[in-house]
Image (tube, rainbow, N blue to C red; front, side, top):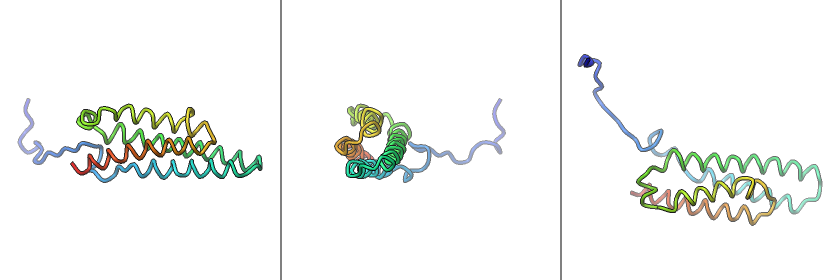
Length: 134
């Protein structure tokens, strides 16, 4: 059964992401990762147990936000043509989210772990902006 002509769509649209481009940006993950690093530095410089407990709690929340922002980019923005052009992109996201998780910045208080995470985010950001130029 065909739809009556009056009910047929007049215009069709498509997008490679959930919303028109402009809503995705790796800067969100970077801002949270910078917070993780600064909290690690403050944690190392302070011996007060209450401060350290609060710092760990906040750091873990921020690390979880890093993972969230990375996952959104990985699953919603990047599409098969991106992964074809950048074959290491899946591995890069996997490494970055692990660095944001318990095996990395979330589970450690060493600022160097946060630096490793920031380097991965920078690599993702570079690819992201290259795809935006295309």
